[in-house]
Image (cartoon, rainbow, N blue to C red; front, side, top):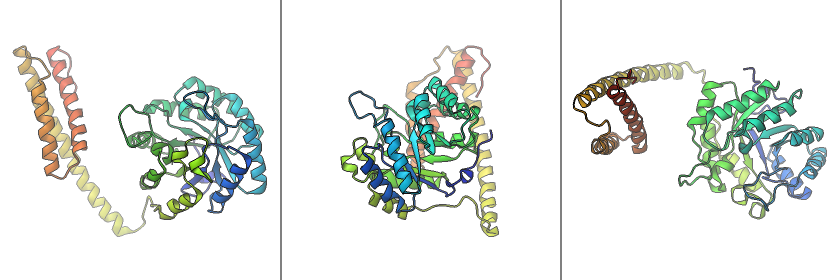
Length: 362
């Protein structure tokens, strides 16, 4: 897939790419004053919600096309670019008509392939950068599919925005980060620029710095941070927006890492560590293979004696003791728990296959 690096997107050459601005354009004055305060910090890419998809009606759903006119007026006064969310072909048409610089597809749209395809068809023949947020639900294929649909429309300036995933489980986050999903996206599409939206992950301005720093530690290409001149009185998502002053403090304290070092001694030491990790991984694989061979023997023994696969008391014992063993070795208990859930699921699958005379696969 031919996706251009972020450095080739004309004026969007800095890494990390910083995008900031209000959740919603509320008034022309609010948009200009917020943009000016952000611009004074050296940020030239502004986000502004024009159409706001709300969960329930009778809430503020964006100012609409009038806000695009405000953006045009602000751009006459300040050398900035604007990014807006589009959710329908009509949004795309209006955004292009008003020369919006960057378009993004929101999480509620990414989840629907029909919607994404309609947006892709409306974008065909343009060269606007398009940023694609992860779908609301944690399904990587939907995210990949949305990227592919936009790319198939002839768009090569594409980026992915990680804004977190909905979940029924109780969490301190508004949307769970599920970092492994964007990491897997980068494994499959290493060329895709990856931008973190800590505002929507956090849902709370006090958590944004830590999330932004973690994203930079993971070599993300940029950040999108909701910023408002008066966040406490914002018309939407007030709790997660930061003031320009707080944005300045966040950016001042962030540490931007480098992905590669040319120092020969450093790289030599890294190679030695990686060789040791490779050997440790081989040992782990061999240990798992040995464990699964024992699982097969247990499965055969259960089959001969007409015993059920699941032995809940034994599983409770394993789950408890392995976490204790891990804790004694300073391993995170949640990590050990998740690891053994996977191992147990594979064991159950293998024993079930044996009991049913199927070809067992570890």
